[in-house]
Length: 315
Image 1 (cartoon, rainbow, N blue to C red):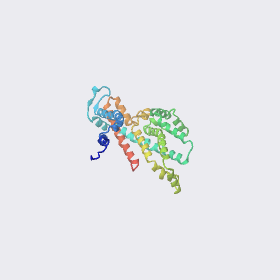
Image 2 (image 1 turned 90 degrees about the horizontal axis):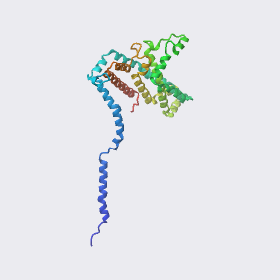
Image 3 (image 1 turned 180 degrees about the vertical axis):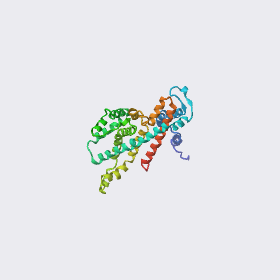
Image 4 (image 1 turned 120 degrees about the vertical axis):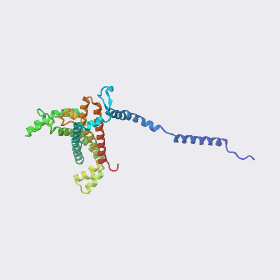
């Protein structure tokens, strides 16, 4: 008898199935370009608007250029940086930026944190309207803020001095005073930023679990103890955000200074961004861009330090 043979279809199909599995495994093992295609638009945009401008700025900072004709650009290496570091006005302008940090960073954070905690603990009505009113100065253009405050602080017809004189004070000339000009700009910057701090901190308080407050009350904690033991630790990320944003605003302060004092009286309110812009007027584009890059590096380093200091410890 002839031995029983399997059906022809089975023998014919097994190699086909094996070949299909082999081809599929090869496709899986081979390079897959789909993830990179999804990343490609973002990489292109980032390269065009971040990488290329930074590289171009770095290249221009190594040249002596009038900012108009490329034919006038000559390579000078790091001479622009050396010249800036040897310029006393450069360090004076940087020192003014550092003086503005407590006004632009710490003061608005405190001014925003206090009403945020009160609104949350006292369950005040109309908090949304109050929040919108506080946030309004932050979205106003800096030039407009400067113009308005320059009018309000005018020593002749400004309402601020008029009110102070009516109640018996002898007010200074504010923006025209060598002593008061820079602190006045600092208070203006704090007024413009504390609404932003309030909105961010209120949003952060709302995400803190209510159970933590209930547990604190069961332990006999008063309002201040709730604030220090529950609210502040729960706002670590939000505080890091507002401090970082306000720090960046302090280091790049320009529009409010330009609209109020234009660096005066004398150089008492000249900040680094204004000093950089004035350098452009002298046809020293490479020198000005070198200052801008230095300011960007300082801003990056200090911002990372703030995020490291006030960010979540487990991140």
